[in-house]
Amino acid sequence: MDNKEDKRIYTLSQEVPAKAVVKMSVPLIIGMFIMVLYNLVDTYFIGLTGDDYQLAAVNLAYPVMMVTVAISNMVGTGASSFIARCLGAGEKEKASHTLTAAFTLTFINSMLVTSIGLVFLPALARLLGAKENTFDYTQQYVQVLLLGSFFTMGSYTAGALLRSEGSVRYSMTGMVVGTLMNIVLDPLFIFTLNMQIRGAAIATVLSNAAGFGVSVLYYLRGKTLLRPSTEQIVPTGEILREIYWVGVPASLETLLTSAAYTVNNNLAVEYSELTVTAMGIAQKVLSLGNYVYQGFASGTQPIMGYNYGARNSDRMKKVLKAGVTAVTGTELVLMAMYCIFAPLLIDIFTDTAEVVDIGAHVLRRLMFILPFVGTVSMCRMSFQAMGKPHLAFAITLIRQLILYIPLLLLLNTCFGFNGMLWAQPVTEAIMMMVSLLLLTNTIKHISPTERE
Image (cartoon, rainbow, N blue to C red; front, side):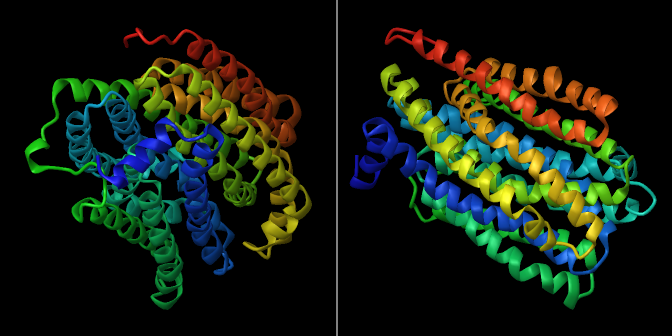
């Protein structure tokens, strides 16, 4: 084992838990903070056009991006979970084969997404909630996203694979490059080339392509612990089972989130299309908090997976405690910032007073998810890392189908727009308690002789 490999394995296996969580998570959080800029750039530059309906269309199209990410997560999460467990068990060759198979599956899936999406494009725009003023804009944006799905899916999958072996900095670099590229390309395509919302979508696709290219380059230059091989393109039955056993529930989690997002937009559009615009801006601003908890969850995932492979339950408990403490404290600080600066943050993206007022109101309600949602995400990702996707999916199923969507419909019916906004904070508060109980009970029963 060379020095580079030894340091990465040491972080996963022996580093002080709090330090390991910080070391694995903070680079990701920094990269994901830059990803916030990535998501906000389109919103900001389209806002400069002065057309709030184009802003609404970007928000309506967001579930398509979520579905694309969900399918890439199916491969990325499943493969990274198995890779981390293989490394923990000392099976490096099997981990390398899984890496190559993940790239093969990502290419196949992206071709299917593009083909099916383009065939049903008009129906898809209507399903997303597009109305008369937003229909054409939504179609334009979604069409480009579908054509570039390979780069989006490849970027997300490659990032997950790099993190699975402890190469967090390399994963972050791909995100940074993609974001910087988007900041440069958005004004070029939207204004200089006068392509408006279509230009924003093209910039997004090209930026994902740049981020994906950087990640692949690390593999080609031999900077990583694992390397893809043309001799391992065809996955074994075991690898396919492991990828899809963990990956399908992970993908369904994002798909259910996308469905909930679509229900939310369809309810909001009944108040007005400008309400959709305001909610979209508020949700993009809130994504800073979302990416913080995703960074902590993704950072702890390979540590939990490695130690599950090594059957080290004591270390898993300490890592979970350190992660929950760190993510909750960070999110409370962000919550205070949102409370104080909500109108100023919304005003960055639009000059329309009505949109600013609604957006600030939405942000000050949705921010109440932050003390709870990080712990929920960390528990769910831990189950995926442990190769127990049925438990991860149970959290998702309860969260989205049993609690959130029914609460969204019920509270909207009973209390109108304000009731609808409280559905997610109530859901996350309940789910934090459910998730922690489920995970701590599972870790308690792990023994050195346990087999999956």
